[in-house]
Amino acid sequence: KGDKGDREINLLKRQVSTLEGQLRALQSSFSKYKQVIMFPNGRIVGEKIFMTSGYEGNFDSLKQRCSQAGGQLASPRNAAENAAIQQILVLYNKSAFLGINDIQTEGRFKYLNGENIVYSNWQTGEPNNDKGVEDCVEVYSSGKWNDKSCGEKRLIVCEF
Ligand code: 289
Ligand code: CA
Image (tube, rainbow, N blue to C red; front, top):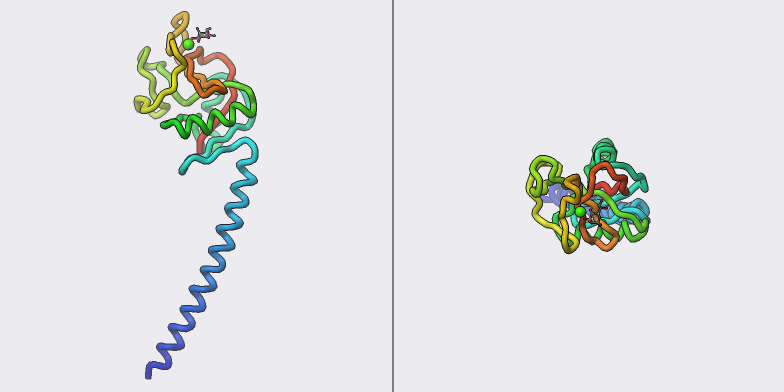
């Protein structure tokens, strides 16, 4: 009668409970791995991970390295993301180049995908395109931004 059905339901219940236990174990193990991998050079904000390797180079070189690693140069879209990048810069006491520039049209800052920026944190008086050669954007360890010549060398911070 219903005995076979009852046995099948009980079997399924045991299987679900086993899977729940395995999922809890995986979640706890994953959360530990995240902590280890983020220490001390990475920060997580929502779905984004910001990370430096400590390398310093010009804009093109940083851009290439981030993309080779499967990410892109840090492109903060809000204050929380900018603050995460800043925390990394404070550790290194250095400035980084962002994945933002106005190479195409002077004064119109865009992300690497060509989209106009939706957030900025310029230092007072910036961007000033000093000597007419500043098309890239550096972020200081204060979190403030300055437009700067793309040929300068800055710390790499990628986002994944
Ligand atoms: O070459 C000029 C830069 O080093 C920076 O100098 C000053 O900090 C300001 O004029 C900045 O805007 C400029 O990028
Ligand atoms: Ca400037």
